[in-house]
Amino acid sequence: MKVLVTGGLGFIGSHTVVELQNKGFEVVIIDNLSNSSIKVLDGIVSITGKAPIFENIDLKEKSKVQKFFLNHQDIVGVIHFAASKAVGESVEQPLMYYENNINTLVYVLQELTKLEQSNFIFSSSCTVYGQADELPISENAPIKPAESPYGNTKQIGEEIIKDICKVTPKLNAIALRYFNPIGAHPTAKIGELPIGVPQNLVPFITQTGVGIREQLSVFGDDYPTPDGTCIRDYIHVVDVAKAHVVALQRLLESNNTSNYEYFNLGTGKGSSVLEVINSFERISGEKLNYKIANRREGDVISAYADTKKANQVLGWKAESSLDDAMTSAWKWQKRLNSN
Ligand SMILES: NC(=O)c1ccc[n+]([C@@H]2O[C@H](COP(=O)([O-])OP(=O)(O)OC[C@H]3O[C@@H](n4cnc5c(N)ncnc54)[C@H](O)[C@@H]3O)[C@@H](O)[C@H]2O)c1
Image (cartoon, rainbow, N blue to C red; front, side, top):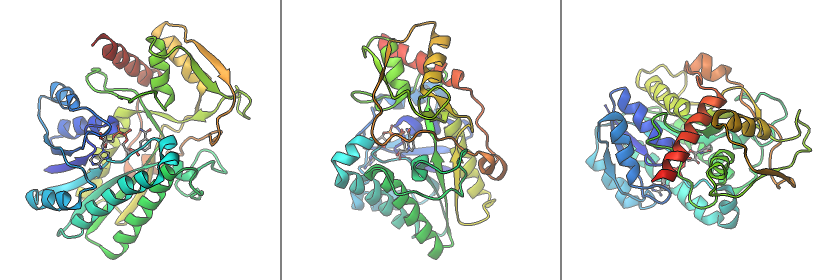
């Protein structure tokens, strides 16, 4: 069965391609390499021994998207990762974010509505909840006004999918709201490839660990949390990848209860910034150079998932611990550094 993975050379996409291939799916990747490298293909092949079909297409080009679907009429499902994801950049360049994250989604959905039957998985984010009133955050928590244009593209994306599913019964969709994906494949053949200064905590830690960054700043230690630093739900990227395969299988086997569903992808456990640093020091045996800095604007204090719906309805559960994920991230960083 042929599956299209858009953004399949990116961080989460590449790990999902591996899990799809492991389950016997034939994978077609679309990626315009705007935030990834063609070398990721080699990493995928060296893990699975199978080469996915790769098309270098910019999904903003509607005619190319149309042509692609004409040439690949046998696709049974689409997993749509392709998007721009840097929160700060989205504040500076909102139109670029709306164009890339919304237009690409609309063009893909337009093609799917032309098919007899189609299955669609969307990369959403826990950012849709903002600072939730109750923890852990369940799927019933209200959607809060977005903190950034990036966050808004995820909210609008979900609305678009909901609206089109309402009038298109043959389109089945699932939005997966990721908490904080971290880590790398245990083989260290694929992982996260941040361009420039990493925006996320774990790549910043591992880059500091190998000396690419001098020091990590911990933004605020006076939050109302046990150790004063912000709390997030860090989830191993391989667990996130596996959830996509489970979600796709749910649609292919018609086990969904409505043609638009959404699930949280998290571990259910919150970890503070200092706990993540401790995890790094524990698994690496290195001391991390960090300092406490002022709070950063827009940071949510605490966010971790209620995983009941994903566990019981989707039938998926995160298996790896923070230390497992950190071990893989560290192995990946050391491999990158040795190249
Ligand atoms: N990484 C996270 O922490 C996180 C959290 C929540 C949601 N998400 C969402 O998950 C998805 C994947 O995230 P990621 O971390 O793997 O990001 P990534 O940047 O590593 O991967 C995205 C991929 O999409 C490609 N792409 C972007 N625009 C494209 C276009 N117009 N045409 C074709 N390809 C295009 C990029 O080249 C890249 O390879 C994104 O939608 C992101 O918003 C990520």
